[in-house]
Image: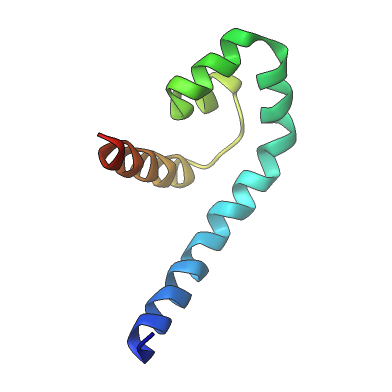
Length: 79
């Protein structure tokens, strides 16, 4: 791995940390919401962003936008 590649990798990890922290804060509530019904779990499998909104988890708008970008990127790769 080249020196510049390592720096980019470390930068990406640093930028992700706030996102991971935010997700850890809502994990327990989200898990409970998912366990409440099969419909909730199915919504999460088909549209995780809509499920997060439906679960009423307390995420900042910026965090939701970041998750939407990530989800869209994953969806494009899966096509």
